[in-house]
Image (cartoon, rainbow, N blue to C red; front, top):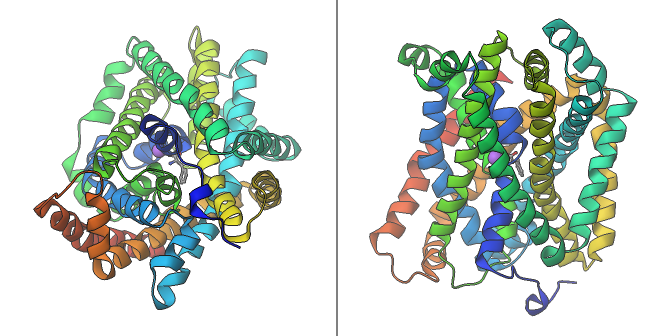
Amino acid sequence: MSQDSSEREQWSTRIAFILAAVGSAVGLGNIWRFPFITGENGGAGFLLVYLLFIVVVGFPAILVEFVIGRHTERNPVGAMQEIGRGAWQYVGWVFVVATFVIMSYYSVIAGWTIRYTILGLQDGYMADIDAAASQFGQLSVGLEAMALHGFFLLGIIAIVGLGIRQGIELAVKVMVPAIIAIVVGLAAWASTLSGASEGYSFYLEPDFGRIASEWTSILPDAAGQAFFTLSLGFGIMITYASYIDEDRNLAEDGAIIIGFDTAIAVLVGLIVFPILFTAGVDPGEPGPGAIFVSLSAAFGDLSVGWLAGTVFFGTVIIAALSSAISLTEVVVSYAVDEHGMDRLRATVFVCMALFVLGLAPAYDLVFLDLYDGLMNGILLLLGGLLISVYVSWLWAGPAVEELEQGVGDIGPLGTTWVWLVRVPVLAVILVSLWLGIVDY
Ligand code: PHE
Ligand code: NA
């Protein structure tokens, strides 16, 4: 039973769509993942490659998802069934699987951010790095972590269950401006720290020798991060674009969304690295706990660190929530469109399944590492690879037509976009995927 497309909800305004997509893009990827992946890969050199990939890979790839979504006005599974031939019809399922895997640990990490926000208000943060590390070891897994993971999912049910207009739109209209204001404020505060200039030079002065010697890890990490941070490879941008009108300029909207996401990631680096260098913490310390351990040690070492830390981790909760609702929406829109399920019931059902799946990473960090490596090194690039191949090689005509909707004839730009996807985008994804698999 498919829902009649005339009854399907749409975003109320262009700004609402942009805010929702920005809300999806800006999340733990910018704040938790970006700084530790950048730190692990040596700082500025990684930043340079990452920024390059955002422009030459991320921008063309976000348009691939936009044209599929707006053309079909359907969820990712239904959309690929509609435009795909043969086995391509089933590509949408990669997204649903990827969505379940990522959400199951994304909300566990979101649960940590809730814990660390409370920590600042309750006892403050520990200045000693070893104490902070053992505290993280205690807080990150176990019953409390499981409960906070469930608590976070309840927030999602409340927002997604209310639907596109009342729920998601309203939430992001408040969240996105708040995040931007707080991140700018914290970056300004961080610039006054004694380790600021050392932090800036690690983060902003690239070491080209290091790029050359470590490209086998920098390349896949930067490509995976570019996809993760822009919410690509999960069908999210397909889903969100399925709710927009034909008279919008997709390329312009894409550029705005990418601009916001990139600005926030870069700003977070301007917060994190000065803090780390001021507290004398090694920015290259690897692992998913790195940012929680080193930042809480850093906050514990600074005079008003408890306040800065509470504000910082509180912001991360908001950012994580707006990303998580977009992930949940992929699966919910599938259940609503294709099976005529009630929206609220579908949301509750999905969140219950996610809760169970997330118990493993909330029980042992080994699972979290495993899920994150699988996601970023493999699954997410695979989803991006499949739709990029399909759209650029087998569906280029309708894709360019869809891109031109709302803009008029874009002449050679359409062909340029198709060839960007056909060659550089696919090459970067393939090489990264291969290096990622070897590494995994
Ligand atoms: N893009 C979000 C972030 O940077 C995370 C995310 C990934 C959200 C994939 C949805 C899908 O945190
Ligand atoms: Na992001």
